[in-house]
Length: 210
Image (tube, rainbow, N blue to C red; front, side, top):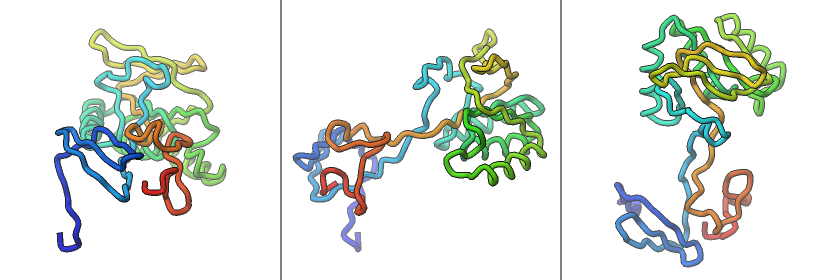
């Protein structure tokens, strides 16, 4: 308040009109702006978006928010000494694999790239981490992807079926296949690129007031 900032909590913006420089809230209130900053974050990509059904099983975990973390910890606690399959070789996959193997769960990591952290690591750096993880009991299955699941009568995943035909036993599955920016309020209004809102060097979108 001292700095002239008004904080409005418990309020969701349901639509934006960039041309008119207005936002509409869920309660029907209109907010006008001169400059708009978009900081809507991102959401975890789900397997369904790649045509793989059944990722709502109780023992399939994502990690993006507190609720996800709670579910992940519960799954970990219930399968000590069991098998976990981690889908994805990025940050989430690597961090979760480390936590799982530390909690005495056998881990297999599956990703299509040649090495872990494909977008960030050189082959040599990746090699270092992969050999360290291997020494801790993590198995790497590279160059393939998940195609479907086998489930028991309760709907829990019992194994992960890969494109190369392999079946991996699974008491739990962690999926870390990337994120998508939350841009739906601005689709069709601002220029998009690579799944996000395109900006210039000043972080301005195709409408300079945004």
